[in-house]
Every structure is written in structure tokens, then in C-alpha cells.
Image 1 (cartoon, rainbow over the protein chains, first blue to last red):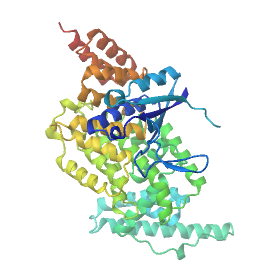
Image 2 (spheres, one colour):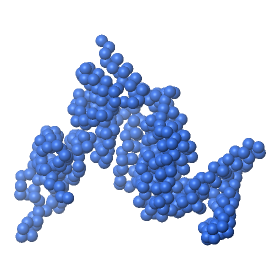
Image 3 (spheres, rainbow over the protein chains, first blue to last red):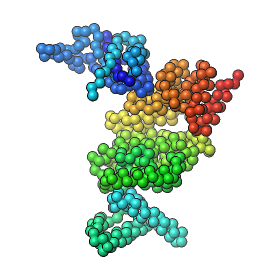
Image 4 (cartoon, chains in turn cyan, green):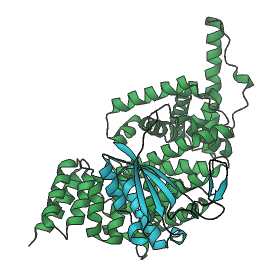
Length: 114
Length: 391
């Protein structure tokens, strides 16, 4: 089994606060992966709000955001295990976020350090 | 009594403590049969034990000094025997911590706890595990050797020791309870005794301020909720009765109330352990009429599976999912679990397919019959197939 990080991106900060029903659907999706014993790391949610997000650049300049500069911002990640990247992509496709608010999920194989 | 004596001897001499304890009870049964039972039986027992202990050490010191010319453990410096209720429960607590030692496997810890803390005989333990007496005997010997080699001192526990060991202790008590609740034995009496002993020991934990944690209270709440259904969940032949078919008037209301009380105690602090979640699920099962019941149970199972994966949690979660979203939506969720070797997996699929695809339902029920070893379960499944085959 290989491990894959699923990186969630949203377009609008307003989408970041789901309704209780949306939250329940997202939890069902996450727990559905855990129920197959394929959840390696339930990851974390990354706060996008002012004061909780800054970017440090090469000249040590610090800016607020990233949300001011790019269209999408990262809202969180999890790590799953799967036989192939295609299986991990199928898991991502089932995420209710696409029907709820849109956004994107980036699927990346994890290179494990020993 | 063994626990109290061990406080004086150290765990090294546990066999001596046990011998003295059983000698004491033997003497009591002889003496009480001929004379009247003394006014304070506990005090009587402990003063006999005390004398036997002093005799033992006197003999030992004569033997060691005169024959082997060796200095001995000096029992005179030991504080006098104390048999107050506080001291007894304190000693039991210390003994719980000694027995629940991760150097031993889970089964070994449970066996030893049953023998030392619950006073079960080797036969009774063998019955509970459905194994041979010899197996249990060997297991107990190994377990005791490991404990001795680990050099665990049974003294007044300090806070750091308690903290580092408490998780193991809770886990052993949890397993001890489950051994009774989901026991392989069909002997209802053994099941009930295992459950009540585990509950008693959990109670000892919550009664001491050092070990009275939110997790411990959550575990105790779980035990109370589950125990409330003990009478209702098996019939007189020890056969399991499905939840929906249980006589709810047999549920023990007072235990449910106790469970509610400990569950409230468990909410102090921020931590949510698996015991909290399981107690929450057990709580919702005690409310058969609440419309939000299954929605709440599903949410708790979602959290539980994120904390710790187990096939049975995965299957129970899918069952709750079916109750909320319907069987049709639950089928793909169930099939993703892919637990081909589990009879429960096929039972769940058989149940979910029942109204949707009779052929598939029968196929899964038949697979489950081949996989299960329980005769009762085979019969229940055969009955389910008969129902499906009715025109």
C-alpha cells in the first residue's frame, strides 16, 4: 500500500464554515475512509482567517494570507493509504465538498522518509 | 485479602499471601460451621490472617538464621496490620495496578485479575475463556513469573506511577468487562459475574481521588449502561437475543441512572476518549424512542473510528449509517469494508440486501453460516433465510 496526501482547497472563505448538515456529510466521508482502515492521518484543518494565516517570502517579507493573492487557499489535508493513485483519486471524488461548495482536492503520493 | 497481605509481603511473595488467605478462609469455614459466626466476620478473618502471617515469618526466620545463617526480612519493622475499609480498598487499588502490567499479554492480565482480584478458580477462568484448565494454569504461571521479573513493587502508589499505568489499567478492566459481555461461554452466571467484577474494580478506581479521572468515569458509565441490558440480552439457555427483540422491561433502570451519573462526571475536562464515545453510544441505546437516536449514534461511531479502527466498529458504524440513510445507500459503504473473512460482515450485507436483492441476501447469509462457529447464530441465520424464501 502506498500513502497519499489529499490536500483540500477552497475558493471562498465563506465556504470554510459548513452548516451542521454539511459538517455531518464531511464527517461521514472521513469516517468512511477510516472504516476501511485506510486513514493514515486524519490531518488538520488550516485556518484561513486574518491573524491565522501569514506567508514568509524569500526577502523575509511577511504578508497576510495567502488568501489575498491566490484564488484558492488550502483548507486542510489528510493522509490515506491506497493500492494506487487511482484508488486515492476515487476516494477524493466521493468527497461531499464538490456538491456542497466546490473547491479542489490535490492528490499527492507521499515519499516516506526512513 | 490477598491484596492486603501483598502490601506487607511484596509481590514477590504473592503465593505465600494467597496460601495464607486460603488457609484463613478454610479455618473460617471449619470454625464457623461448629461455632457461631463472629459478630464482625471481617475483623475475625483478618486477625486470623495476621496471626498466620506472624507464624509464617517466625518459622522463616528460625529456618533462615539457624539453618542457612542468613539475615531475613525484618517483619518487626513493618507497621502493624491494618484492615480498615480504606486500607483494603487502597490495597486493592495497588493490586489492580500490579496486575495490569503491560509486560503481560491482555489475556494474561485478565486471567490474573480474575484469579487475584476476583477470586476466580482456575476452572472458572477456563470456563470463561472456553479453554482447558492446563492452558490457564500455564498462562497464570508465566504471568506471575513475568511480574516477578519485572520487579514491580506493590506499595503505596505515587502520582507519576498511577498516571503512566492508568491507561493500561482501564484497558484491562474494559477487556475484562467485554470478556463477560461478549463471552464465548454460554454460562449466563459467569458472564454476569465477569461484568460485575469489572464494574466493581472500575468503581474502586473512581472512589480514589488519585485515580478518579474522566476516562475512568466514562468507562464506568459504559459498564453501567451495558450491564443494564445483561438480563435482557440472553435467554435462559444463554442464547443471544437481538436488540430489537429484547424485553425492555428487563432493562435495569437503576443501572441506567448510575450510568447517566458517571457519564456526567466524565464530562469534567476536555478529553474525549474512546470510553466516552462508547458510553455515549450505549447511552443512546437506552433510549429506544428518541427520533435522533441513530443520527447521534452514527456521529459517535464516526468519531470512534477516527480514534481507533476495529472491524467491529466499522461494521457497527455502517449499521448506524443504514439506520440514518437507508439500506440502499449503506450497501456500497458496507461493501467497501471488504471484511470477507468476517461472519458479521456477511450478516450485515445479508440484512441490508434483504428487501433489495433476495438472492444476494441469501448468498451472504449462507456465507456467514459457513464462517461462524456459534450454533445459535447458525440457527438465527437459517431462520432469516427461511423468511426470505417464503413466497
